[in-house]
Image 1 (cartoon, rainbow, N blue to C red):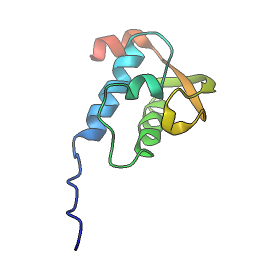
Image 2: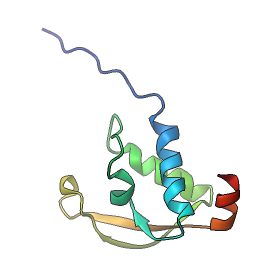
Image 3: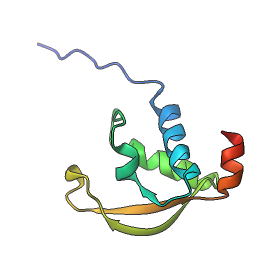
Length: 94
């Protein structure tokens, strides 16, 4: 017997980009743990890395440090600490 194919959430990427931008506009430091809390998960957990990589390349966020993750599935693995860059411009774009 075959498993039914799961439908991909085609809006996840844009929603996730906006979610991280909201954290960047806050002006406070944040981690992927903070962003993921209460947000739907992607088809594959590695997609989160692409979101942070994209926004860092766009100059929206900047990594300012590291700490152990609080996400149980990460088992204490290291996660980046991020901060919005040019927060004033982000607020205007919102």
